[in-house]
Image 1 (cartoon, rainbow, N blue to C red):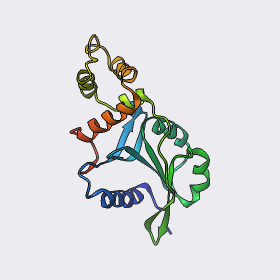
Image 2 (cartoon, rainbow, N blue to C red):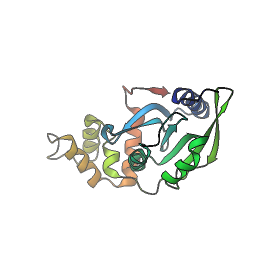
Image 3 (cartoon, rainbow, N blue to C red):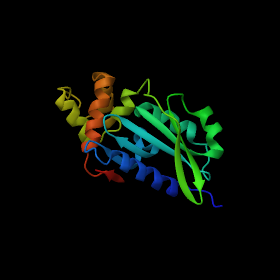
Image 4 (cartoon, rainbow, N blue to C red):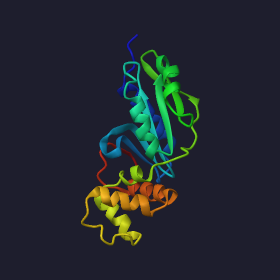
Length: 194
């Protein structure tokens, strides 16, 4: 039997997420969302009340990059779920943090079948700078203006703008602001819902 590859698994996962969130006008599903200024790209992101990420590891993938991906995703996603083939289940458990969820992929006559093995929990610590870096420059400037924090920073490089945001806005408030900005962003590549 042929190995299931990322595109087949992704298609089933996205269909499942679209079905789950189809009644929510507050949900945005994004195919391949960059994090940490492009260092990593989560396979599927769901933005609604919280930011959730889904990382796919198919039978034909390697786990070499997973530790770096875990490190980057832990900075910005309030929930993370790994969607993995049975052959990687035990290896993946050793790499991901305990708060991540796990969905197991089975090959049912060439069709991906998904089953939740472990429900995830909320991320205990987000990185304010990494959250700020999810914003485009104009979005970051608008956030500073909204908060009255723009003085002396508008002509500075992006990294200074992100630093000001991270140092000036409490993490709990920042994650809500970033979530809302991302949900209303126009021009997403790979946007699926609404």
